[in-house]
Amino acid sequence: MYRFLLTPRWIGLHIVVLLVIPAFVFLGRWQFGRFEERSANSTQVTANLSAAPVPIGTLADDGVTEADRFRSVTATGTYDAGHALVVRRRTQEGRLGFYVLTPLVTGPGQAVLVNRGWVKAGATADAPPEVPPPSTGEVTVTGRLRLSETADSAGVKDRPGLPPGQVLLIDVPKIGASMPYRLTSGFVELTEQRPESASAPAPVPAPDVGAGGGLNLAYGVQWWLFIGVAVGGWILLIRREVADRRAGDKSPAEEPVSN
Image 1 (cartoon, one colour):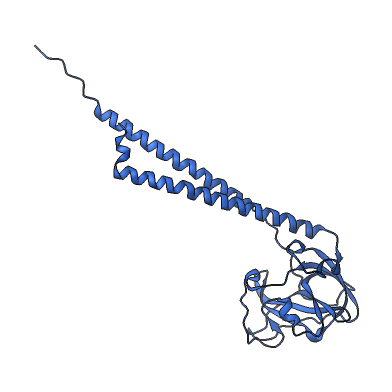
Image 2 (tube, rainbow, N blue to C red; image 1 turned 180 degrees about the horizontal axis):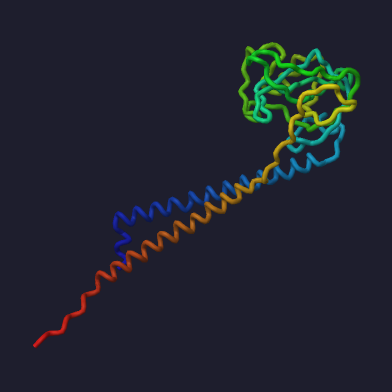
């Protein structure tokens, strides 16, 4: 009765099912891994955003790490407007513009880059934007500690030939090579300044922590449910084929003979 399972058509179906099952297992495991990764990242970032500010030197002197991302820090010093930069191709609230990057000199031969906020783009791509000047005198800034950007982390490809004072990436080591002081590892995304500036760029919004990988968890469960659907469908097809063959093998009832 089950010899049909060895026919070419059914052997092909067996192979498809045997290939589909490990593929769905792999995809489910990958989604669960992404869920764990994103959940851990969400937990870390949320904790850093809600933590009390600490002096930047306590974190950045030995190099900013992944665990320090978005940690609230403070720094005191004076802005060096002569070495200020703007960062091209930065979008905020659906509009294209620039980030305003200004070194804050915190001591002899030492400074930290501060992203003071966002300004709208000029009339043309190469036109300099209108940037509110930084405060003069000593200020204390509070902000989110960020890692130095790369093309992969920022999603922006660096290129030469930009107008003076403009960059595409907040690449701290590269920017620091042209500065007259040593830059602290990482940079600060400004959230508060004392004393306040009379005018300032638009603040950069806090990061969207998101659902912590909830979609990945749902997709992982979905892929593993597909395994049950594949196996259940395979069994159902076999049982239906067996039932059809048994029905076909039954002889019709003999009619009574008339005298």
